[in-house]
Image (cartoon, rainbow, N blue to C red; front, side, top):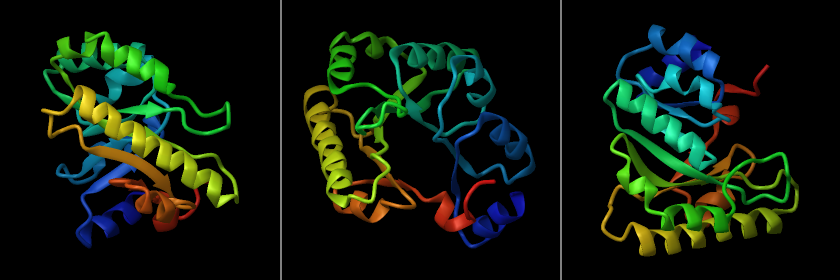
Amino acid sequence: DNDQILEAYDSGHKIFGESRVQELIDKQPNLPKDIEWHFVGRLQRNKVQFVVPFINCIHSVDSARLLRRIEQQAARVDRVIPCLLQMHIAEEDSKTGFSEEECWEFLSSDEWREFKHIQLSGVMGMATFTEDESIVRKEFKNLSTFFTKVKEHFFADSPEFKEISMGMSSDYNIAVEEGSTIIRVGSNIFGERE
């Protein structure tokens, strides 16, 4: 809740993630204006308009269609939104995201170079939910390797393309070892969601 966020904020933390649009738009107006909000959950195209006025980064861009909608809505409010391409790295079908082939094809199309209100800033992935650390490590290693290929091929001249958002409360230590630059550890800090 907001009190917990304020406690973390008062101790110096300025970046907070939220995975639910409704909770984000309820919280944001009542909290300090210099908080940097990252959206980390599934973002439906019809909800984009509600977050673009203030969001600082969208981690969960899982399709070209969503990217186009973010571009359109960000243009409306004249903002540039940093976005991460969500990659489907897990063995679970419930997770969404680009396959490596889809992502490479999209980036090769150069459509994204026309976008004036999106800053592609890296990749995001969620590992399989399993006790088997070797599976988790392999998935994170694959994402890290793919990031490097994409960076060299499409973003060699773009210092902004630098983020690998991977690792949650249960597996962040492995993610960091495999090159994560952003971990999403809300449960460890604030407790499990209701």
